[in-house]
Image 1 (spheres, one colour):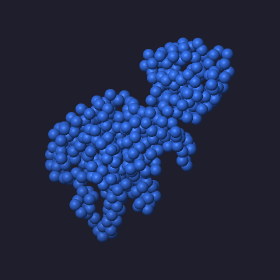
Image 2 (cartoon, rainbow, N blue to C red):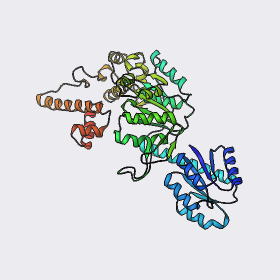
Image 3 (cartoon, rainbow, N blue to C red):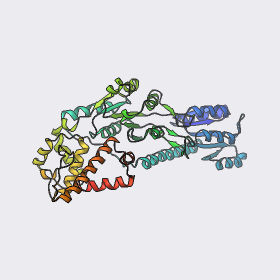
Image 4 (spheres, one colour):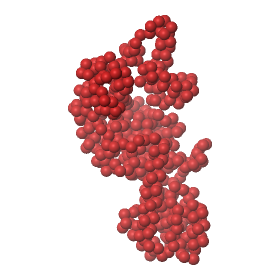
Length: 450
């Protein structure tokens, strides 16, 4: 994305502006005519447009209107002679950000441009905070000393400083997003956005809008322009989790972004150019999906430039003491875990990996009056898949508990099928979203759900 478009028909002044802006560290494109400026503006993404109010081929006010139709997220600064200030005020009423009266101090222009770019960055960061409700992340901590996790961390440290695409492979709950965030934090892009999106958690008809954005009126309900995740991640990193769940049409659009670093918003014609580092992740066998024609082979090879396999917890059980201590401290508890409790945990296979370990330790911290003992570690039984709990005392209690366990097991199963999408889960279960949330809270309190 270029920073600034200059539309100025006086060759000497236009070239002076372009070279001065370039020398100051900005990227600038100069157009001698308004109509040429419109064509350039359609092809490239600009943060700012400097527009001369009096052009030979088109009125400056009309040019402003045309450019705003193409991209109203850009900021427009009008350049005008002293005698045309009234027209500059008219341009401000039409949405221009500011105006400069010729001749103007170039340093003052630089200050204005830096303020606009800073405001734009803050705007994008606010969009990310509102849409994803993210908390501030420091450098993610990868916990463990086992050879398996050490190999993965070593590969990440080598790949992170490059701009190569990284493909993170691993079972659910192994910490793929943690590795992705670490890769961003160790990269040259660390001061720019990290944007994460779960491709499996968003319905197909909404996912394209989330990834690429849309123009006002692109579809029913599109009352405003929406900035997509790729555009928000410009100069930073985008993390595409569960990439295998993309349908083939979206896969082809992702491939184009990887190849050309540009796209169009839904309902738009302007080409949006971005500079994005892609980190993707999946818990599925992509090579098998390629053989089954369910995943594009060309996209697979684009994504797997640098594959990193994250080991399952059962493959690194020697890290359990370190992981348990880290998780307990993360919850802010002043408790320790006994050796006997750790031995019990080492005999379990942990199909839910680190996420399941966190849930088990959170339950243990609630149950344990003091330090954590084996009795405080509630692990699933073979027949129900639910934590082993106290037996009911009578038939009435048994009937109630049986119904609750059955409901909880069904909810757990459907949430796994929908990858945590509660809206879709409530639809499949035939209950309202509010009812499902209430059941989840209730069964978590009873330790029937993780």
